[in-house]
Image (cartoon, rainbow, N blue to C red; front, top):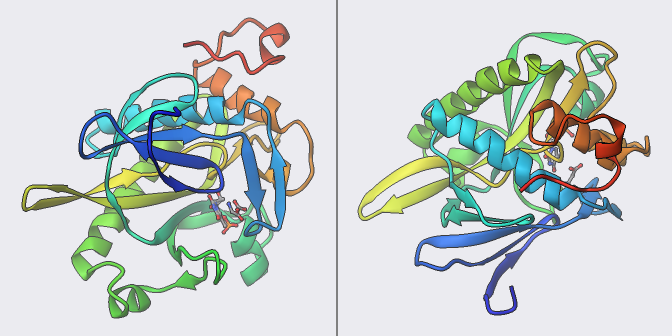
Length: 254
Ligand code: TMP
Ligand code: ASP
């Protein structure tokens, strides 16, 4: 790692220059933050699990034709990605009311939504990621109308696919956040899924018990954060399925 130049450091990940032009190395940290940095902590083993879970999800998505920045996992905490121009939006898709939607609109957490909702938040720590509309996005040129259409249709495809994927392992995909980037290849530009998809950026509830298997365990001080992330990995078939012994350490299979 020391030999690589750091390009960017975020709250949960670091980006380093990649081995070839147009590539980056994405390093997953154990650091966790919530409520725009007000709450901070370390979740031991989280980076290893998120690297593996995000690899799995991005790989499955690319198999159904969703373009992503993911190239390959390099080791326990790093993956090789394509360098993209990040569109400064957090795109949230919701299937069930929870979190800020419940607070803002007074809808009880757990209420199924009659249809999936896509929301856009402007990525700005200073402004605390405010909710914005397509009007704001085009007015300030964060994305063109054509790009918004593409982002919305990709976000809904990702949601449909992941909803089924998680349902198959007994997990309800309540909501998730994703980010997109512009991938330039000569004069051609494609919108691709970027960043990560992991229990840091999803709400995942056990289908039977409604137990939370995501970052809300950290946000709401519920304890057992790493164990919940491990449970998600285990159900996706990424961790060995050998009972509680395997859930002790952050021992993820290579
Ligand atoms: P929210 O209910 O707090 O708006 O969150 C919606 C989804 O987006 C939830 O799955 C958590 C995820 N999320 C992030 O990944 N990063 C963020 O900064 C926020 C606010 C939410
Ligand atoms: N990741 C965001 C932060 O650091 C918020 C969140 O996930 O709750 O504040």
